[in-house]
Image (cartoon, rainbow over the protein chains, first blue to last red):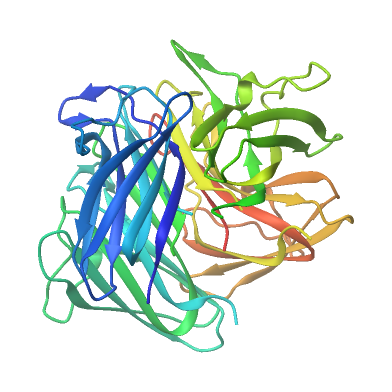
Length: 118
Length: 118
Length: 118
Length: 118
């Protein structure tokens, strides 16, 4: 079975900058080759306040889901704050692979970074 | 034996931007130190449609192959679509090492990102 | 228990450039899901001189700490030099996850890079 | 013992661009916490020609060495070609940690990427 059920990302951050059609954001990119739909829970951790739970996503077998963090809303209607460092726990009921990427447009030009999660 | 036969990349994306001699693209970079030629199959997974199979490449022993995804054509003559998130399964009959990188020129200047695949 | 107690980063570097509100810096980003507060020691290694010890940080359970290296002061009042290559040993008394990122503003626009530490 | 003796990097490339004080380059960054000096051999692999052997470096205990690939000369007086994709095998007689980073100044502004090697 390819992948695993729990993944961790320590460096999360979305600035509030927008440039034309581009918006600074992060994406938790998931690939599911497990044979069944994966149900995914995201928990966000911060430096100085309680975690935010209750963000959910799914990814079907033989599909990818590039989960845009700037578009997520949790069970309580909360979104992920901008301009605030966070970290992410990704939990899936099926083994998946997780890679996290950031697009930042704080400056006239933009910057990209990515890493396979831990 | 250095490397392994199966590698996964969750964040794939090629914008359709061109800037002078530069074209936005991704490369699946392979190193083969297995003693024999590696035959490599790529499968592309999407968010909302069936996978694309049938992309093939080879990498000789003691050679690298930086497989440009914008130049691949599969058995059915299909190319990898731009402006559409994907993920990649890399399967080789010999152990290899895989690293995936993106060059994006959507903006006047460009951005790079890379990670060893999972 | 998620994570581990020892992490290594081989490529550290902070240029001395500043651009408006942005300052070139690196961050050692930590996530702690161990159940107790983590006490973290950083040691900096250089190419041509003795290591710098005595940089300390903490990270509570279910919190992240994005440790800005340009703001750290060690037990002897020393800071981390700019324009000088270094590497980092991160030691924690509790298992944590570590990801290291660099923001560089040496040029008019900036660049980002990140990787999960080893 | 922290680290390992063999590391692989699949995506190597140095463009021939220079911009003011900046030159496009890659660095194989090494950290040695093994207790003794590490003697390191680099082998460069290409897409369409024989490997280049005979690049050597050392890294003392509790030191880092950010090995600039644009400055290496092998036993036969050869340097690493620019504008040509390569991959790297890093072999050390002592366990080390290896991270590879690229600075590219092909465009007016520059781009960075990094990953812990495999």
